[in-house]
Structures are given as C-alpha cells and as structure tokens.
Length: 171
Image (cartoon, rainbow, N blue to C red; front, side, top):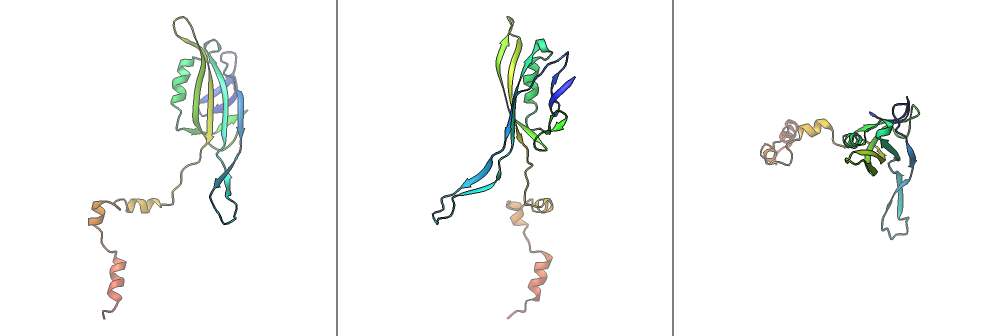
C-alpha cells in the first residue's frame, strides 16, 4: 500500500484493494498587510507578516476502487476542528498543524437504487495557530468574579493596601 498523502486518520492511498488519488494539489504564501487612512504622507499600507498557509487538493471516491463515498461524507464532517500535520511522501508538508477548512462533494454518480457509486471531493486545509491570551491563567482564576454583582459586594482592600493606609500620618 502506497500512502501518498496523510492528514491524521485520513489517508490517500494507491494499492490493489483501494485507490484514493490526490489531484490538483495547491499551496502558496501571501503577505498580510493592513491599510489605513493616514493623511500625513506616511505609507498607508503596513506589512504585518504572512497570511496563514492554505493547502488544497481534490480526490475521487469510488465504490469500484474500494471506498464507499457515503461513508466518506460522514467521516469528513467528523474531522472539523481537528488539527494534524499534513504528510506527503512520508514527510511533513507545510506548517506543523493543518486544520480542515472545507470539503465540498461534487459530481456524484448514483446507481438505479440511489446508491452513490462515485464522487469528487475538494478538500481545503489552513495552517493552525493556537489562540494565545495575555491573561495569566492564575490571574484569570483568581479574578473570576470580577465584573459580577458578587465580586462588587465582596470587594475589599488587600492586606498590603490596608498596611499602606495605616502608615500615612493623619493631618
């Protein structure tokens, strides 16, 4: 069995019992820039880095090639919000993690009973970058009631604030 492309549990293989080819593989890079309405004569476009990398390709699922198309439709739906490296020829291709952005099924061929015999799938992935926050996890837990009525009712100065106030001489 020759695995040409793999993304997590999804494999695109060419073997005597199963054929799931990869076609029309595309990827690329583009600049990320912001435009503003500065009238002071400064450049109005600021380049801020690179856009997230996308990888797209298509495939065909056919019962005659050992794959049930209707099963693939449900399986692809279950893979949204998951991230895996994209592997081509046994090596990582692109960023460390890729996330499924879209999968579109077209050209469905049905038999006389309505069973899907074959279909094309256009699959699109995007580079996954975990969200980061500037709030420390501990601070977030300690201040979980900030902005609530309970937090306002239980607000009190800290021990350090009380000590500092005692040190100030009264006039």
